[in-house]
Amino acid sequence: MELSELQQFSGVIEADVFSVLTLEGSVSARDHIGGTAPDQVRKAVAVGQQLLSGRDQHS
Image (cartoon, rainbow, N blue to C red; front, top):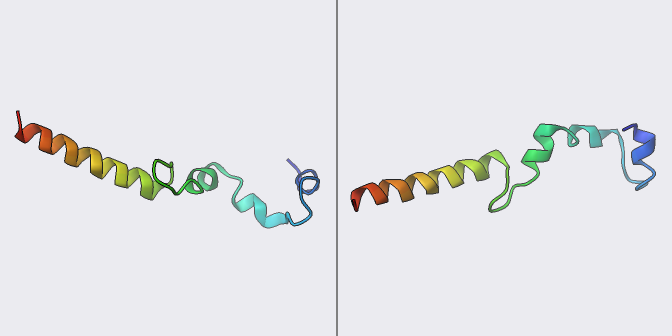
């Protein structure tokens, strides 16, 4: 989308919006529990690994 098209949605949209409107920016913006931000994914992996390691000990 062109900047002029985006500005039709809001007058506060400037060219810096394009740094967020990328695949990486979109994924990183979801930085909440269960989100797709890299830190959240790392936390979920760590929790999963802990659950699995505890499961092996109880077998």
